[in-house]
Length: 212
Image 1 (cartoon, rainbow, N blue to C red):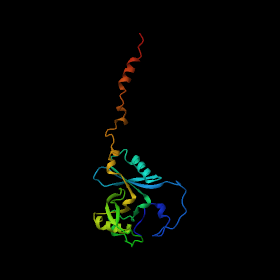
Image 2 (image 1 turned 180 degrees about the vertical axis):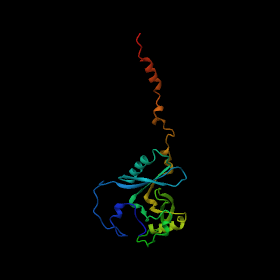
Image 3 (image 1 turned 180 degrees about the horizontal axis):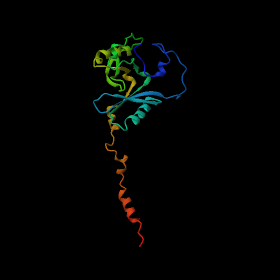
Image 4 (image 1 turned 90 degrees about the horizontal axis):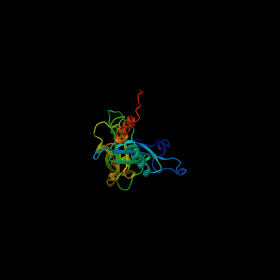
């Protein structure tokens, strides 16, 4: 198998490909879903994986990720995807291209019309997956094949993530103001608080007198 779910809870079930068998529904909010966050450090750069968040839905996941991954670092955009919707390839070695080693399989399910998929590449172990581009396909497997043809000839690629564009919650261009922050956060430093004059005055007024 060339693609598996990024969510280990899904992978452990060893579900057959195709239609998912009926399962007993979980109690509401039995456990939060896991979402993966990708942020853009500055306009024009690729979205890069920054980490997971746990949340009851993708809107709350977006808020959690914004608080966790954009407060201390420059950020101009944020993408959120549910972990179980991300399909991953096996890992390769740092000096090889995983596209050359995976076995492409005939997909069990296809959409009637091609739809966009987002492709993320890991160039080196220990680094983060970065957005490599978007391809049109009717299945995850076809998206992977399209990615190999369009994006897979640029040096070593250790691992590939594939996710449908419709499964990615993306920050909107018109909401760019949400990323505006104070460039100089002097309030975090003691020097920003003007109390030294008062301290000096207090010391002068309460200086102990020497005995005559």
